[in-house]
Image (cartoon, rainbow, N blue to C red; front, side, top):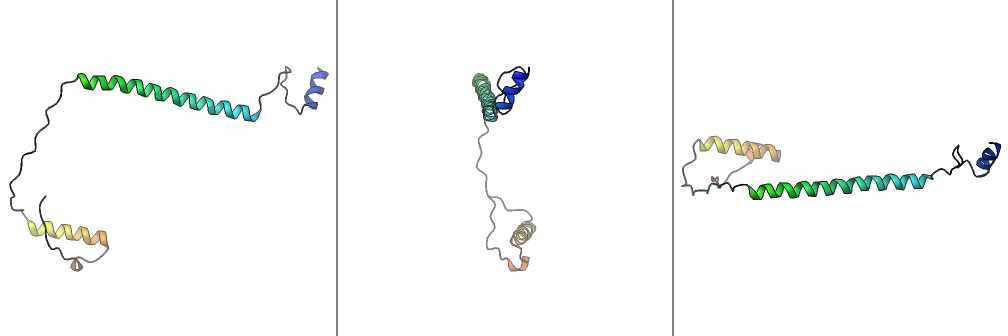
Length: 110
């Protein structure tokens, strides 16, 4: 036992109690990083597998008919003055100016 303690002191305390060398700090850091990246790679592979299964399910599903946009006829805007007042108040607030400083030249429904 005294031989192990003497050897441990001579080597700078890098031996375990059973005489085997301790891993260095660099080794522990590299093993931790390798473990994290191995876990991330496993997650990526798992996501790819799940994505492949979910894309197969979407392909086998019946396609849903999308409604076709019908052209609208230009109808007069109801309460035009109220809408212009609200828009000009919002623009004035955003610009940090007074409403009277804003002049709206045209207002069209899109």
